[in-house]
View 1 (cartoon, rainbow, N blue to C red):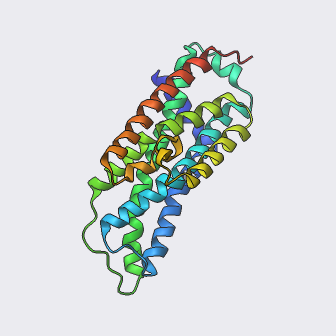
View 2: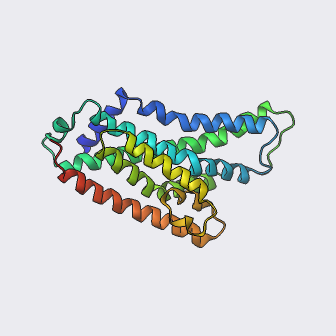
View 3: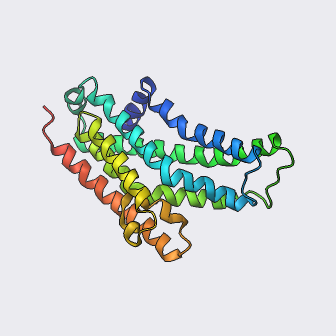
Length: 241
C-alpha cells in the first residue's frame, strides 16, 4: 500500500495539480494584503481569521476540490492508462484508496497553506498600510480549529467530486456538478435546510449555533467517509476495459 501511495504521489510532479494547489493560498494572500493595506481590515484578529476562513469555506474550498480532483483523475483518463494501472499486481481497491488519500492529503495541505496565507497577508498589509491597526493577537489554535473542522465538514463534497472525476473520462461532468453545487450554495446560504446541502457544510462550521456547527461537521465527515468507501468499492469492481 505504501508503494502504491508513493507511485500516486509521484504522478503529481508531471501534472498541473501542484500549480492549481498553489492558487488558493496565493489568492487569499493577495486579497488579504489589499484589504488590510487599504484600511478595510477587520478591527480584531479573530474577525480577520474568521473572514479568511469564510472565504475559503464558501468559495475557494469547493473550487479547489473541483480543480484538484478533476486534474488527479485526468492523470489516468487523459493518456487512457486505466488498463495499465489496474493491471498492476495489487488489489484494485488499494489503487483507488491511494488516489483518494492523495487527493485528501493535497486538500489538507492546501487548507493549511490558506490558513497561513490569511495570517501572513495581515502582517504584510499592516506594514504597507498607513496607520492600520488590528487589535488583539493572532490565535493559531482558532485558525487550525476552524480550517481543520472545515476540512472534515468538506469531506462529503470532496467524496462526491472525487467519485465523479474518477468515473467520467470527461472533466465536464464533475466540473458542472461542482459549479452547480457552489451556485446553489450561494442561493441557499440562509435557508433553514441549507445545513443539509453538502456544499454548505464547511460554511456552517462558522455558525453561531454550536449545534448547527457540530451537525455540519458530523454529517460532512461521516457522509464523506461513507461515500468514499462506497465509491472505492464500486470503482474497483467496474469494468475499465
